[in-house]
Image 1 (cartoon, rainbow, N blue to C red):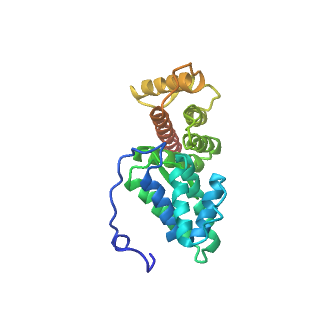
Image 2 (image 1 turned 60 degrees about the horizontal axis):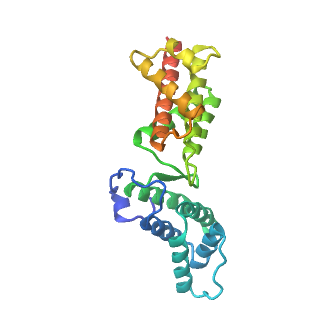
Image 3 (image 1 turned 90 degrees about the vertical axis):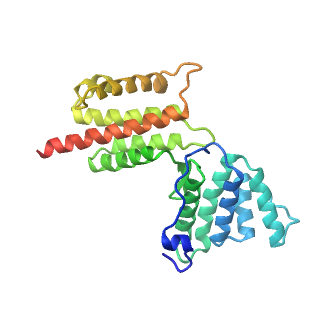
Length: 269
């Protein structure tokens, strides 16, 4: 808590998360927020223009030298930028903030406020460690976060890395690698299933031996079949959609956590 905290921050008031409606877009409000939060973090018009021009590979207008004219130029550049470059600009601003931040707090504050803005305006992105990454449903967030932590704790770094790769693929801009996300999510689940089963069989062969109650085992087998068809043996005109990829990553992560926790409980008895 800082002395400059606003009324809402001091008293813990904030808007509820809005349903995600913006993914492959950067509406006017998003563009404005990224720029204004940069200024609020201490970036001046000149520094802001340098950062934006570097991302867009644009030459700064030599005829603009006053602060007001430079701000107008920055507005125009951001307004005209492709949607995915706007998020690149947000990452660049985050990196540049550190140059003049002697308190060591402004980067974190920029990321926090930007992510909060995204949540309150239904934007399906968030900033983590200076990078704009995919933000899914609450179930997606909980499942993937728990999966990585549980896998690492259980000594399954390969599975945890596969989840990380799935998150990277689904976060790609301008187009998410949905097939890659599905492949990596199911690879993580297969790693966990092999460890629990103590075999090197494929997931399809292992499912019937896992401690998953009926009829959920049947649903998992269908998920494996879907992932095999859509993620590995994709057919022309049948590419999976973004929502399907999010669903597979969520379910694969949740099932992995269930299997590892069930195995840990069984060992402790």
